[in-house]
Every structure is written in structure tokens, then in C-alpha cells.
Figure 1: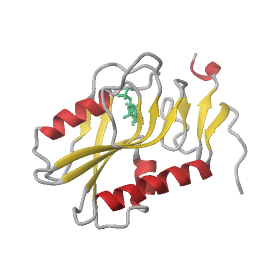
Figure 2 (figure 1 turned 180 degrees about the vertical axis):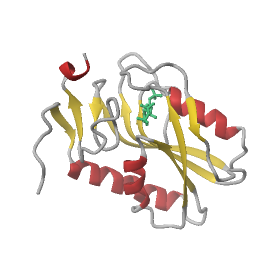
Figure 3 (figure 1 turned 45 degrees about the vertical axis):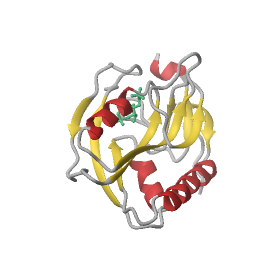
Figure 4 (figure 1 turned 180 degrees about the horizontal axis):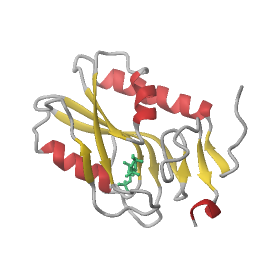
Length: 183
Ligand code: PRP
């Protein structure tokens, strides 16, 4: 049964069906682009674990997965400006084709930090698959992901792995959080 809308959610931005279509397309593109390359898909925990789990099952070529845990937001709604490594990769990426899977690209701080960190380890290539990219008026993101699922407005969104104070990651859709919840 499709659950009803969570009372803290103002409106649904991306439904389960929208998400399915988006992720399937991204998986298809990666399947075509990385044939014969055995890419390493790096999940940026925690938010991206839901997206990566779905994406991985739409990639129809041999690939590996590893996990990186970073945090820049803590429990707040604004980036602290500092990216903290909570868990590094277990895989050596030298000579590997790396795809960083992120749930959301907001200021781009997290991804540009990770790109620099990984680039120093001499991978064969490094690209980004971002499920959502926030459109911030007047701002050009620091990073241009090769794969973009959806452009989303500059609202506080949660669900499908995205949290506010560790809540709402389990919502099966992406929704806009009611301002009274975080203000
Ligand atoms: C969120 C999100 C991205 C990052 C994007 O992570 O998952 O990693 O913020 O923002 P940026 O483009 O402004 O850097 P968060 O630090 O909230 O940790 P989480 O993944 O554990 O939710």
C-alpha cells in the first residue's frame, strides 16, 4: 500500500515513480559508458546509500562498490563549510574508473572536496552521479556532475536518503519539508 503523505511534508517533489524513471536512466547511461571498465561506485554516506542501492541494480555491467562517510551539515540546515571524513574507502582507487554517487549536490563543497581527495590517488577517471542538483539562483555549482538525476529547487528537501537531523531518510519519495519543522 502506498503510504499517506508524512505530516511534516509540505509537498512531494519527486514521487516513487519519478525516482524509478530517473534512476533507471542513470543506470542505463552508466551501463553504456562504462562497458568493459569495471567501475568502482563510491557511495557517499550516509545520504546516498538509498540512491546507490537502487542505481547499482540498474547498472548491468560488472562494477564494484565502496563507501565513504563524510559529514558537512551535522544536524543543521546550513553547511558548516568543513567536510569531515568519517570513514575512508577500503579500496585502492589507483588506475580505477571511479563514479562518486551522491544524493544531493547543494553548495558542491562535499563533492569538490572528494574530487580533490580522490584525484590525488591517481584513478583512471573520476565522475559524479548526483541524484539531485539544487538550483541556487545566481550560483554556479563548483562541480558539474556527468550524470544528473533531477534539478531541484532551493528548498529544504528530505526523503529517499536525505535527512533533517537524521529523520525522514526512510521516506520513499523526495518531499519539501514544512518550514515550521526546522525554523
Ligand atoms: C549532505 C548530502 C551531501 C552534501 C551536499 O550530506 O548527502 O553529501 O550534504 O551538500 P554540499 O553540496 O553543500 O556539500 P550531510 O553532510 O548532510 O550528511 P549525510 O549524507 O549523512 O546526510
